[in-house]
Length: 411
Image (tube, rainbow, N blue to C red; front, side, top):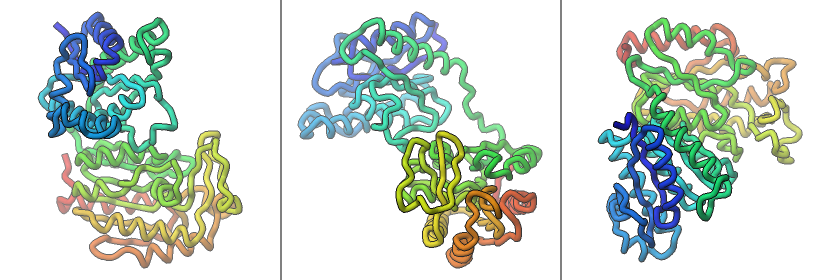
Protein backbone atom coordinates (compact mmCIF):
# COMPACT_ATOMS: atom_id res chain seq x y z
CA UNK A 1 0.00 0.00 0.00
CA UNK A 2 1.12 3.56 -0.72
CA UNK A 3 2.34 5.43 2.34
CA UNK A 4 1.68 8.93 1.00
CA UNK A 5 -0.64 10.23 -1.71
CA UNK A 6 0.20 13.06 -4.07
CA UNK A 7 -2.40 15.17 -5.86
CA UNK A 8 -1.30 15.63 -9.49
CA UNK A 9 -2.92 18.62 -11.19
CA UNK A 10 -2.80 19.83 -14.77
CA UNK A 11 -4.53 20.15 -18.12
CA UNK A 12 -4.86 16.50 -19.06
CA UNK A 13 -6.20 17.32 -22.53
CA UNK A 14 -2.87 18.82 -23.67
CA UNK A 15 -0.34 17.44 -21.16
CA UNK A 16 -1.60 13.94 -20.52
CA UNK A 17 1.74 12.24 -21.25
CA UNK A 18 3.72 14.51 -18.94
CA UNK A 19 1.22 14.25 -16.08
CA UNK A 20 0.90 10.48 -16.42
CA UNK A 21 4.69 10.22 -16.44
CA UNK A 22 4.81 11.97 -13.05
CA UNK A 23 2.04 9.71 -11.74
CA UNK A 24 4.07 6.67 -12.84
CA UNK A 25 7.20 8.06 -11.14
CA UNK A 26 5.30 8.55 -7.89
CA UNK A 27 3.82 5.07 -7.98
CA UNK A 28 7.16 3.42 -8.83
CA UNK A 29 8.57 5.07 -5.73
CA UNK A 30 5.82 3.56 -3.58
CA UNK A 31 3.51 6.55 -3.40
CA UNK A 32 -0.11 6.94 -4.33
CA UNK A 33 -1.51 9.44 -6.82
CA UNK A 34 -4.78 11.33 -7.00
CA UNK A 35 -5.39 13.14 -10.29
CA UNK A 36 -7.24 16.37 -11.10
CA UNK A 37 -7.94 17.67 -14.59
CA UNK A 38 -8.19 21.44 -15.05
CA UNK A 39 -8.67 21.41 -18.82
CA UNK A 40 -11.40 23.46 -20.44
CA UNK A 41 -11.89 22.47 -24.08
CA UNK A 42 -10.53 18.94 -24.43
CA UNK A 43 -10.78 15.66 -22.56
CA UNK A 44 -8.05 13.42 -21.11
CA UNK A 45 -7.15 10.11 -22.71
CA UNK A 46 -8.29 8.34 -19.54
CA UNK A 47 -10.63 9.52 -16.77
CA UNK A 48 -9.05 11.39 -13.87
CA UNK A 49 -10.07 11.04 -10.24
CA UNK A 50 -11.46 14.58 -10.33
CA UNK A 51 -12.66 15.82 -13.69
CA UNK A 52 -12.79 19.28 -15.19
CA UNK A 53 -16.53 19.18 -14.49
CA UNK A 54 -15.84 18.67 -10.78
CA UNK A 55 -13.43 21.61 -10.84
CA UNK A 56 -15.87 23.94 -12.57
CA UNK A 57 -18.66 22.93 -10.19
CA UNK A 58 -16.40 23.70 -7.20
CA UNK A 59 -16.23 27.27 -8.58
CA UNK A 60 -20.01 27.44 -8.74
CA UNK A 61 -19.94 27.12 -12.52
CA UNK A 62 -19.97 24.54 -15.29
CA UNK A 63 -17.66 23.71 -18.16
CA UNK A 64 -20.21 25.07 -20.62
CA UNK A 65 -20.29 28.35 -18.71
CA UNK A 66 -16.48 28.42 -18.54
CA UNK A 67 -16.24 27.92 -22.31
CA UNK A 68 -18.81 30.67 -22.83
CA UNK A 69 -17.04 33.08 -20.47
CA UNK A 70 -15.42 35.01 -23.30
CA UNK A 71 -11.68 34.37 -23.28
CA UNK A 72 -9.08 31.93 -22.02
CA UNK A 73 -7.92 34.23 -19.22
CA UNK A 74 -11.40 34.44 -17.69
CA UNK A 75 -11.93 30.73 -18.23
CA UNK A 76 -8.72 29.77 -16.46
CA UNK A 77 -9.46 32.08 -13.54
CA UNK A 78 -12.75 30.27 -13.00
CA UNK A 79 -10.91 26.95 -13.13
CA UNK A 80 -8.26 28.28 -10.74
CA UNK A 81 -11.00 29.18 -8.28
CA UNK A 82 -12.55 25.75 -8.60
CA UNK A 83 -9.22 23.92 -8.38
CA UNK A 84 -8.24 25.86 -5.25
CA UNK A 85 -11.60 25.20 -3.58
CA UNK A 86 -11.64 21.52 -4.48
CA UNK A 87 -8.00 21.03 -3.49
CA UNK A 88 -8.56 22.51 -0.03
CA UNK A 89 -11.67 20.38 0.43
CA UNK A 90 -9.77 17.22 -0.49
CA UNK A 91 -6.92 18.15 1.83
CA UNK A 92 -9.29 18.82 4.74
CA UNK A 93 -10.78 15.36 4.11
CA UNK A 94 -7.30 13.81 4.38
CA UNK A 95 -7.28 12.64 0.77
CA UNK A 96 -3.69 13.63 -0.08
CA UNK A 97 -0.38 14.59 1.53
CA UNK A 98 1.26 16.82 -1.09
CA UNK A 99 0.54 18.40 -4.46
CA UNK A 100 2.43 18.74 -7.74
CA UNK A 101 1.10 20.96 -10.52
CA UNK A 102 2.33 21.23 -14.10
CA UNK A 103 1.89 24.12 -16.50
CA UNK A 104 3.03 26.87 -18.79
CA UNK A 105 1.90 30.40 -17.99
CA UNK A 106 -1.77 29.39 -17.81
CA UNK A 107 -1.15 26.37 -15.63
CA UNK A 108 1.28 28.28 -13.43
CA UNK A 109 -1.26 31.06 -12.88
CA UNK A 110 -3.70 28.41 -11.63
CA UNK A 111 -0.99 26.56 -9.67
CA UNK A 112 -0.11 29.62 -7.61
CA UNK A 113 -3.71 29.95 -6.44
CA UNK A 114 -3.93 26.25 -5.60
CA UNK A 115 -0.75 26.39 -3.51
CA UNK A 116 -1.97 29.42 -1.58
CA UNK A 117 -5.13 27.51 -0.68
CA UNK A 118 -3.08 25.00 1.34
CA UNK A 119 -1.58 25.60 4.80
CA UNK A 120 2.11 25.75 5.56
CA UNK A 121 3.69 22.32 5.87
CA UNK A 122 1.80 20.73 2.97
CA UNK A 123 4.42 20.03 0.24
CA UNK A 124 3.64 22.14 -2.83
CA UNK A 125 5.62 21.65 -6.05
CA UNK A 126 5.09 23.54 -9.30
CA UNK A 127 6.73 22.36 -12.53
CA UNK A 128 6.60 25.38 -14.80
CA UNK A 129 8.09 26.84 -17.95
CA UNK A 130 8.31 30.16 -16.07
CA UNK A 131 9.72 29.04 -12.71
CA UNK A 132 11.80 31.81 -11.08
CA UNK A 133 10.70 34.21 -13.79
CA UNK A 134 10.05 37.93 -13.18
CA UNK A 135 6.60 37.20 -14.62
CA UNK A 136 5.71 35.77 -11.20
CA UNK A 137 5.15 38.53 -8.64
CA UNK A 138 6.34 37.62 -5.14
CA UNK A 139 2.91 38.20 -3.62
CA UNK A 140 1.50 35.26 -5.60
CA UNK A 141 3.87 32.79 -3.92
CA UNK A 142 2.74 30.74 -0.94
CA UNK A 143 5.06 30.69 2.03
CA UNK A 144 6.61 27.25 1.40
CA UNK A 145 6.16 26.74 -2.34
CA UNK A 146 8.78 24.83 -4.35
CA UNK A 147 9.33 25.30 -8.07
CA UNK A 148 11.40 23.59 -10.75
CA UNK A 149 11.89 24.78 -14.31
CA UNK A 150 10.11 22.58 -16.82
CA UNK A 151 12.91 22.76 -19.38
CA UNK A 152 12.37 21.54 -22.92
CA UNK A 153 8.97 20.05 -22.27
CA UNK A 154 6.32 22.36 -23.67
CA UNK A 155 5.18 19.87 -26.30
CA UNK A 156 5.67 16.27 -25.32
CA UNK A 157 8.10 14.06 -23.44
CA UNK A 158 11.85 13.90 -24.03
CA UNK A 159 14.89 13.02 -21.96
CA UNK A 160 15.47 16.65 -20.90
CA UNK A 161 11.99 17.34 -19.59
CA UNK A 162 11.80 13.90 -17.96
CA UNK A 163 14.65 15.04 -15.74
CA UNK A 164 12.52 17.90 -14.39
CA UNK A 165 9.33 15.86 -14.14
CA UNK A 166 10.94 12.93 -12.33
CA UNK A 167 12.75 15.23 -9.90
CA UNK A 168 9.49 16.97 -9.06
CA UNK A 169 7.66 13.67 -8.58
CA UNK A 170 10.37 12.34 -6.31
CA UNK A 171 10.76 15.60 -4.44
CA UNK A 172 7.09 16.02 -3.56
CA UNK A 173 6.77 12.39 -2.46
CA UNK A 174 9.95 12.64 -0.42
CA UNK A 175 8.76 15.88 1.15
CA UNK A 176 5.42 14.33 2.06
CA UNK A 177 7.28 11.52 3.81
CA UNK A 178 9.78 13.75 5.58
CA UNK A 179 7.84 16.87 6.50
CA UNK A 180 7.23 17.76 10.14
CA UNK A 181 4.17 19.97 10.06
CA UNK A 182 3.43 22.49 12.81
CA UNK A 183 1.84 20.44 15.56
CA UNK A 184 0.49 23.16 17.86
CA UNK A 185 1.88 21.57 21.02
CA UNK A 186 3.44 24.88 22.09
CA UNK A 187 2.03 28.37 21.52
CA UNK A 188 4.11 30.22 18.93
CA UNK A 189 5.40 33.77 19.05
CA UNK A 190 5.86 35.14 15.55
CA UNK A 191 8.76 37.57 15.35
CA UNK A 192 10.14 39.63 12.48
CA UNK A 193 13.82 40.50 12.32
CA UNK A 194 16.80 41.04 10.06
CA UNK A 195 20.32 39.69 10.37
CA UNK A 196 22.11 40.49 13.61
CA UNK A 197 24.40 43.00 11.90
CA UNK A 198 21.28 45.21 11.69
CA UNK A 199 18.88 44.12 14.47
CA UNK A 200 19.87 42.19 17.58
CA UNK A 201 16.86 41.87 19.93
CA UNK A 202 16.09 38.30 18.81
CA UNK A 203 19.30 37.09 20.45
CA UNK A 204 17.85 38.01 23.86
CA UNK A 205 14.16 37.43 23.21
CA UNK A 206 14.19 33.98 21.63
CA UNK A 207 15.80 32.07 24.54
CA UNK A 208 13.80 34.04 27.11
CA UNK A 209 10.50 33.26 25.39
CA UNK A 210 11.46 29.61 25.01
CA UNK A 211 12.22 29.47 28.73
CA UNK A 212 8.64 30.64 29.28
CA UNK A 213 7.27 27.66 27.34
CA UNK A 214 6.73 29.34 23.96
CA UNK A 215 8.07 28.41 20.56
CA UNK A 216 9.57 31.31 18.59
CA UNK A 217 9.43 31.59 14.80
CA UNK A 218 11.65 34.39 13.47
CA UNK A 219 10.82 35.66 9.97
CA UNK A 220 13.40 37.46 7.81
CA UNK A 221 11.76 40.76 6.85
CA UNK A 222 13.06 40.91 3.29
CA UNK A 223 9.81 40.42 1.36
CA UNK A 224 9.13 36.70 1.28
CA UNK A 225 9.64 36.44 5.03
CA UNK A 226 6.99 39.06 5.66
CA UNK A 227 4.60 37.26 3.34
CA UNK A 228 5.12 34.00 5.23
CA UNK A 229 4.63 35.82 8.54
CA UNK A 230 1.36 37.32 7.31
CA UNK A 231 0.20 33.97 5.93
CA UNK A 232 0.62 32.23 9.30
CA UNK A 233 -0.95 35.18 11.12
CA UNK A 234 -3.97 35.12 8.82
CA UNK A 235 -4.71 31.56 9.95
CA UNK A 236 -4.36 32.47 13.63
CA UNK A 237 -1.10 30.58 13.92
CA UNK A 238 0.50 32.80 16.59
CA UNK A 239 -0.26 33.33 20.26
CA UNK A 240 1.39 36.75 19.98
CA UNK A 241 3.52 38.62 17.48
CA UNK A 242 6.61 40.71 18.06
CA UNK A 243 6.63 42.62 14.80
CA UNK A 244 9.83 44.58 15.30
CA UNK A 245 11.27 44.71 11.74
CA UNK A 246 9.19 46.80 9.35
CA UNK A 247 11.30 47.66 6.28
CA UNK A 248 8.78 45.81 4.11
CA UNK A 249 6.14 48.43 4.95
CA UNK A 250 8.37 51.33 3.93
CA UNK A 251 9.36 49.42 0.81
CA UNK A 252 5.71 48.85 -0.05
CA UNK A 253 4.92 52.56 0.23
CA UNK A 254 7.99 53.49 -1.83
CA UNK A 255 7.21 50.96 -4.57
CA UNK A 256 10.15 48.64 -3.93
CA UNK A 257 9.82 45.01 -4.99
CA UNK A 258 11.33 44.01 -1.62
CA UNK A 259 7.98 44.20 0.18
CA UNK A 260 5.84 41.81 2.17
CA UNK A 261 2.63 42.31 0.22
CA UNK A 262 -0.23 44.78 0.46
CA UNK A 263 -1.59 43.13 3.63
CA UNK A 264 1.61 43.60 5.63
CA UNK A 265 0.78 44.46 9.28
CA UNK A 266 -2.90 43.66 8.87
CA UNK A 267 -3.46 39.94 9.42
CA UNK A 268 -2.51 39.59 13.07
CA UNK A 269 -4.97 42.33 13.97
CA UNK A 270 -7.70 40.79 11.86
CA UNK A 271 -7.10 37.39 13.51
CA UNK A 272 -7.27 38.87 17.01
CA UNK A 273 -3.60 38.17 17.82
CA UNK A 274 -1.97 40.48 20.42
CA UNK A 275 0.79 42.56 18.83
CA UNK A 276 3.98 44.04 20.21
CA UNK A 277 5.31 46.34 17.48
CA UNK A 278 8.39 48.48 16.91
CA UNK A 279 9.57 50.32 13.76
CA UNK A 280 12.84 48.45 13.29
CA UNK A 281 14.61 49.48 10.08
CA UNK A 282 11.65 51.60 8.97
CA UNK A 283 14.11 54.27 7.86
CA UNK A 284 15.46 52.58 4.73
CA UNK A 285 14.14 51.64 1.31
CA UNK A 286 15.62 48.40 0.00
CA UNK A 287 16.51 47.68 -3.61
CA UNK A 288 17.51 44.47 -5.32
CA UNK A 289 21.26 44.43 -5.77
CA UNK A 290 20.97 44.36 -9.56
CA UNK A 291 18.83 47.52 -9.65
CA UNK A 292 20.06 50.98 -10.42
CA UNK A 293 19.22 53.32 -7.53
CA UNK A 294 16.50 55.71 -8.80
CA UNK A 295 17.65 59.31 -9.16
CA UNK A 296 15.50 60.63 -6.30
CA UNK A 297 17.27 58.33 -3.82
CA UNK A 298 20.86 58.81 -4.95
CA UNK A 299 21.66 61.71 -2.61
CA UNK A 300 20.46 59.86 0.50
CA UNK A 301 22.39 57.93 3.15
CA UNK A 302 23.26 54.60 1.51
CA UNK A 303 24.15 51.11 2.74
CA UNK A 304 25.26 48.26 0.46
CA UNK A 305 24.47 45.12 2.45
CA UNK A 306 25.64 42.54 -0.10
CA UNK A 307 25.24 41.79 -3.81
CA UNK A 308 21.55 40.93 -3.33
CA UNK A 309 20.28 43.94 -1.40
CA UNK A 310 21.17 47.60 -0.88
CA UNK A 311 19.38 50.43 0.87
CA UNK A 312 18.88 54.18 0.69
CA UNK A 313 17.54 56.31 3.53
CA UNK A 314 14.01 57.67 3.59
CA UNK A 315 13.76 61.43 4.02
CA UNK A 316 11.83 63.11 6.81
CA UNK A 317 8.56 63.46 4.91
CA UNK A 318 8.67 59.85 3.74
CA UNK A 319 9.30 58.71 7.30
CA UNK A 320 6.29 60.69 8.49
CA UNK A 321 4.21 58.86 5.90
CA UNK A 322 5.42 55.47 7.12
CA UNK A 323 4.57 56.40 10.72
CA UNK A 324 1.02 57.38 9.74
CA UNK A 325 0.56 54.23 7.67
CA UNK A 326 1.84 52.07 10.50
CA UNK A 327 -0.68 53.65 12.88
CA UNK A 328 -3.49 53.24 10.37
CA UNK A 329 -2.81 49.55 9.83
CA UNK A 330 -2.67 48.81 13.54
CA UNK A 331 -5.78 50.82 14.39
CA UNK A 332 -8.19 48.13 13.24
CA UNK A 333 -6.75 45.35 15.38
CA UNK A 334 -9.19 43.12 17.24
CA UNK A 335 -6.60 42.50 19.99
CA UNK A 336 -4.32 44.70 22.10
CA UNK A 337 -1.46 46.49 20.33
CA UNK A 338 1.55 47.91 22.18
CA UNK A 339 4.02 50.01 20.15
CA UNK A 340 7.54 50.42 21.52
CA UNK A 341 9.42 53.41 20.09
CA UNK A 342 13.19 53.50 20.83
CA UNK A 343 14.06 57.19 20.63
CA UNK A 344 17.78 56.70 20.02
CA UNK A 345 17.58 54.67 16.82
CA UNK A 346 15.88 51.80 15.05
CA UNK A 347 18.68 49.80 13.40
CA UNK A 348 22.43 49.43 13.82
CA UNK A 349 23.46 51.56 10.85
CA UNK A 350 21.55 54.65 12.02
CA UNK A 351 23.92 55.26 14.94
CA UNK A 352 26.27 58.24 14.70
CA UNK A 353 28.97 57.38 12.19
CA UNK A 354 26.86 54.67 10.55
CA UNK A 355 25.89 54.55 6.87
CA UNK A 356 22.25 55.43 7.62
CA UNK A 357 22.84 58.14 10.22
CA UNK A 358 20.39 60.99 9.54
CA UNK A 359 19.36 62.68 12.82
CA UNK A 360 17.13 65.30 11.16
CA UNK A 361 15.03 62.71 9.33
CA UNK A 362 14.86 60.52 12.45
CA UNK A 363 13.65 63.50 14.49
CA UNK A 364 10.78 63.99 12.02
CA UNK A 365 9.93 60.30 12.25
CA UNK A 366 9.93 60.37 16.04
CA UNK A 367 7.70 63.44 16.05
CA UNK A 368 5.18 61.79 13.73
CA UNK A 369 5.22 58.55 15.74
CA UNK A 370 4.27 60.53 18.84
CA UNK A 371 1.38 62.15 16.95
CA UNK A 372 0.07 59.18 14.97
CA UNK A 373 -1.01 56.61 17.53
CA UNK A 374 -4.34 56.90 19.31
CA UNK A 375 -6.12 54.74 21.86
CA UNK A 376 -6.73 51.85 22.08
CA UNK A 377 -3.24 51.38 20.58
CA UNK A 378 -0.70 51.77 23.36
CA UNK A 379 2.31 53.92 22.39
CA UNK A 380 5.40 53.87 24.61
CA UNK A 381 8.60 55.79 23.99
CA UNK A 382 11.79 54.15 25.26
CA UNK A 383 14.97 56.07 26.04
CA UNK A 384 17.26 53.61 24.23
CA UNK A 385 18.29 52.22 20.85
CA UNK A 386 16.40 49.23 19.46
CA UNK A 387 19.59 47.14 19.77
CA UNK A 388 20.10 48.00 23.44
CA UNK A 389 19.24 45.36 26.03
CA UNK A 390 16.70 47.78 27.51
CA UNK A 391 14.48 47.41 24.43
CA UNK A 392 14.31 43.61 24.65
CA UNK A 393 13.84 43.75 28.41
CA UNK A 394 10.86 46.09 28.09
CA UNK A 395 9.32 43.90 25.38
CA UNK A 396 9.54 40.94 27.77
CA UNK A 397 7.90 42.94 30.55
CA UNK A 398 4.90 43.75 28.32
CA UNK A 399 4.76 40.15 27.13
CA UNK A 400 4.81 38.78 30.69
CA UNK A 401 2.04 41.17 31.75
CA UNK A 402 -0.10 39.97 28.85
CA UNK A 403 0.48 36.35 29.82
CA UNK A 404 -0.44 37.13 33.42
CA UNK A 405 -3.70 38.89 32.53
CA UNK A 406 -4.67 36.26 29.93
CA UNK A 407 -4.21 38.42 26.83
CA UNK A 408 -1.68 35.85 25.63
CA UNK A 409 -2.70 32.23 26.03
CA UNK A 410 0.18 30.22 27.45
CA UNK A 411 0.81 26.49 27.12
